[in-house]
Length: 364
Image (tube, rainbow, N blue to C red; front, side):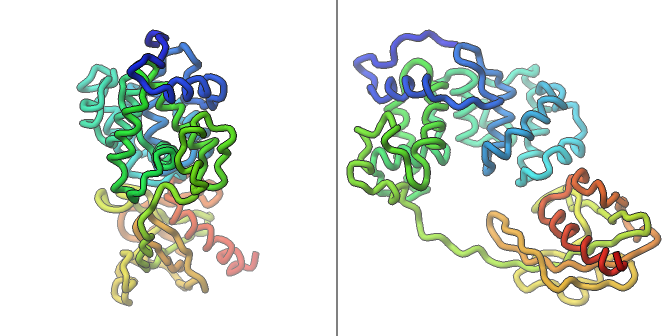
């Protein structure tokens, strides 16, 4: 690690020192976080940061440990078949992250000798690494003075400085405040400390201000308006889309799975056959085009609903049986092992909705 010169030098904010003192006493124990005084492993930092995008710490923990067991370093991950990685990713959502994870690992091995770049600019040139992730890796893994601003940090700083500008327009002002508070030593610990402060103390609802090392400097707390910050724009209603999914089952208790196109939403992922998803929904001709050959197709009474980032999907589910494989590429997969197929959650919901109906249809 870097030297431990006091971060409370005259030209630095005393708030940085107080936060580091709080962090030394209250830092979370996380599987990707090294003990104090031990250098962080860039591979673990990178892997955890990619997994944590749009996903909670509680969800990521088990996935992270399974990935480490299966692929203990970036070379092992780069050499893994992409399908195997995507299957291991199932349940974390946002599958573009998994494809970028694989591509990034291969570039690091091929172009960087298996070593991660140690600065924001070089990190941002890699697939799947945006401004926040690059700053987080640079700070945490390499102790660079990089302002890593995630949702937790936005909330802490917006409250402390009572920033009235709504997000995302406030991001620049928040970053400037973080840069002004950052100490010259232990910037990696500082980055993690603000994240921990937001995750455990300065929470979205009912923040525990009495335990906050920055309470005396917090303008929102002084005004009693913590809940008002960060200011957010009016929420737009997600548009609705509609489609039909087809669950085809053979006498061996297997479901027919195909693969999505290599471009677009959930690109390259395993699926049950489905129509396109549009605002109007598919017409009869499109349903006939995508419905596999089977007997007695029957639609379930209620569609499944799945919320994506930019739209809500109502997906009708149809179920049928077939003794032979339909035309086109696909594979029969045992229903008893469906959780291991690597299906995105929306298609797993479709199968799980159909299977009880299928049992009823068979009288069992």
